[in-house]
Length: 297
Ligand code: C5P
Image (tube, rainbow, N blue to C red):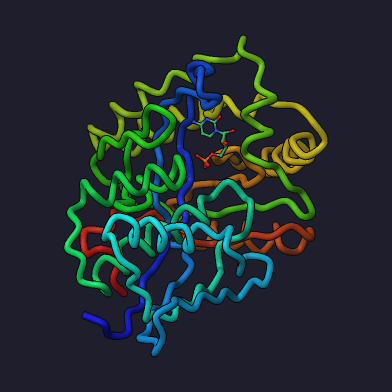
């Protein structure tokens, strides 16, 4: 089916993230409740009259062969056992970079799904899951989206019932970069095993909005938030400012993004506006229930 395709690549937040231990392979064993949100990049696939693929991205720095989309192409061609080519891939970035929102991982997942269809490869979900886990720890979650418990290094996914609907405000502090590998590397193992996320999973299974909000409100939700350093300290400053406004900002992934859940649109919009006015970046979006339609728009 070598016809034009437009595929959404959604961002994710970590409602809870518990780092359990450091593994011999350098990764960390974790359990995390991941949630797909509506903020998304877009990937467009079009027929291209050449044996090669053409790849371009609206962010110049991401246009090189290091991009996970490029690596997804290579993995699919390797598995198919032939050079498939003949596709122009354009990646429209919209998710902030290096923000702990799995933007790159989601692009890779969308490329796997879209190219599997574009090239008519017929690879099953299990086969795509396997390729996804080779691309990065979050890519497997991004294939299906919705709400899920991620285990292992993040690539073992157990789907959970969709989270009740919430508006989500993301606050991305200005001028801060936190590299995932550095955040994990700086963890003090005395903090491993916290937070305990079982009550959050139970509240999601019971579809209890109150239970979910109570767990989130009870305190720190993410082991990676315990890391200290210049970038992390700036996130904590923004967090304190938001807490002083009576809000409940929470840490996503390895940061630096903070997220807040709201039931009321008007409040979410006002908070978004206030964050932008202070010079940081706010994104108003909402929770999503999964990619059952294989991410079609
Ligand atoms: O899997 P991914 O390439 O996204 O991970 C980026 C880096 O984050 C890894 O190289 C590793 O240093 C760190 N990481 C980790 N434990 C995990 C996931 C990521 O230590 N579960």
